[in-house]
Image 1: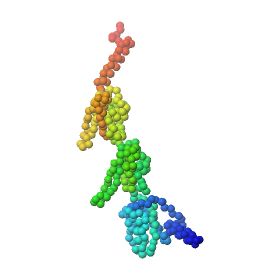
Image 2 (image 1 turned 120 degrees about the vertical axis):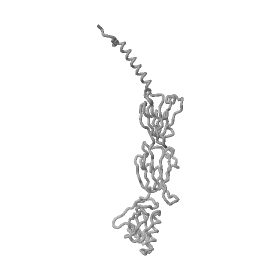
Image 3 (image 1 turned 45 degrees about the vertical axis):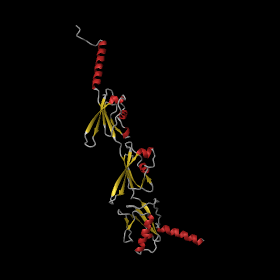
Image 4 (image 1 turned 60 degrees about the vertical axis):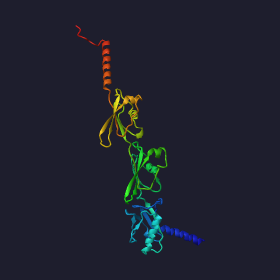
Length: 317
């Protein structure tokens, strides 16, 4: 019994030495098991042959080259255990070893990049190690910025019928992913995806309002003249009854002027008017009302002056 225990201890020590302990211990990251891809870094070891241990970078064609082998070995698309069998078979075929026990572990993944860009707080690119969801990717980018729109564009590359890579874009509503927490939209990412969060469109208001400027559109379906007036803190004095929307034609690029009855909308006698991204709402000044008030102010100041005896009709002799 003692002999068996001693034999097991010796085997463990020998295996540890064969897998990388040559004077000092070498630690390799415990990465999840998944298929190897181009540019990944793998570590190979052969039991009983510590001189064969080495780290190898998978080239852009998905192959690895070992100095003891004449032919390269395809690694891309294989799980580590499958690559172990391929290396062992190559060692036997080229009569280097009789019955080798090969171990393969992934040191670094570089073949599964996921990029997150656009209206996020911290655009980033990382490797899809293990299970990664769309929410995980957004979290790594520290969430959405204030300029984020209403959807996420997820681009995946797939092989087309002609064997060429084709980019497929999927639109994911942010409300469905975040607010509704619908698992249907929290897609699993495997690497190679590009995530882009477009910025929300802007609408603009100028003229006789208290706070003119540009405002982000949170939900295009809920953007109207009344909402834009509320964002701009309402009309300033002497606003005209009629306003104008300036909208660019998407086909010709020409800017069209659309008159709207602003006073009737405010009095709820006409329906609210929907706005689109890049629209400009212009509220003119009611000059006749301003002139009337100016005339009234002059009359009042004239009366105040005569009432106080400051008006002199002629020279007193």
